Image (cartoon, rainbow, N blue to C red):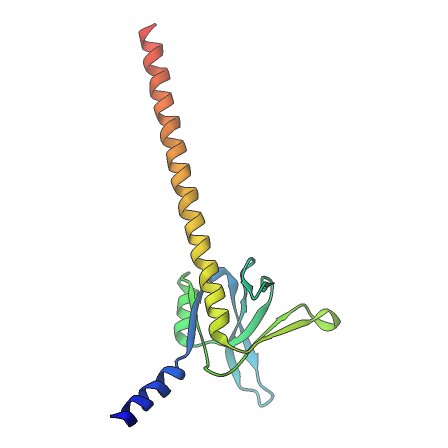
Length: 154
């Protein structure tokens, strides 16, 4: 029984980190290896406002070998779920040439949590804006009705 529990703990430790990136932040491209083989890859940009330990990661990106599922999600306009291998750091970059800056995130789960928190906050703010807009349009509509009713009475 104890041996079975230790195996299960090992499996949990090996779970891949996964998070959805907004479709417009995923950019597919082809990579040709030195031996001529061609691979589907993606540049994944970190949305502006994503912070990790007080550092704004917005504008940084990482390169990722594309899976068929991710290519399909991108093509269909859906958010793209990116998986990160357990135990491997995520290397982010920004800029080119001498202006290139890099960051390494040792735990991919930290990046996933930061992106997820940003996605949730963005969705919440969009819902609030939509609710306020609907409320404002309803008030405008009611005012139009009242004005037309007043016009009929005179």
